[in-house]
Amino acid sequence: MCHGHADTIVVAKVSGTDEIVGGYNPLAWDNSKSGYMKTNNSFIFSLKMNIYGPRFGYCEFMMKSAISDFTQDKQCFCGGYFNGYEKPIRTIIGYFSIVDYEVFKIIKKH
Image 1 (cartoon, helix red, strand yellow):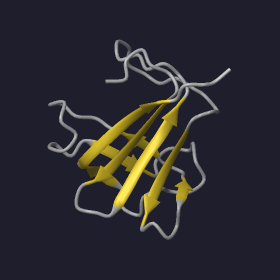
Image 2 (cartoon, helix red, strand yellow):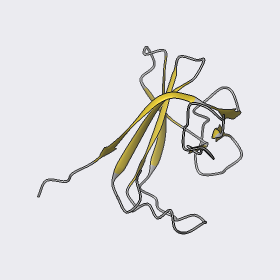
Image 3 (cartoon, one colour):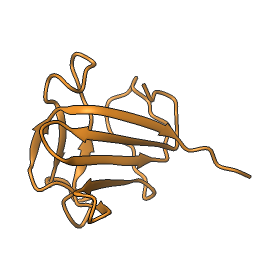
């Protein structure tokens, strides 16, 4: 889905809640490697009950699915176990499925 693309934003609706979560990654995705890449220019966010607006958080947001369907197997994750952010973006820690998602590529104008 994102392999080889840099500057992407993922936005996802969490199943069974009113939550919308997502993140920005400036690095090119490489699904041929396992492991992590480091950058200070990425962020994750939560849009919950539209009165609050964006919230950046102390959490890692991961979309994963063994069957390539993020709506089915509850393998997406967002939790407070990682030290990359100050505040959590979800009040519930654990695995979840999503209803739908979009991936956007940011094109920089020169």
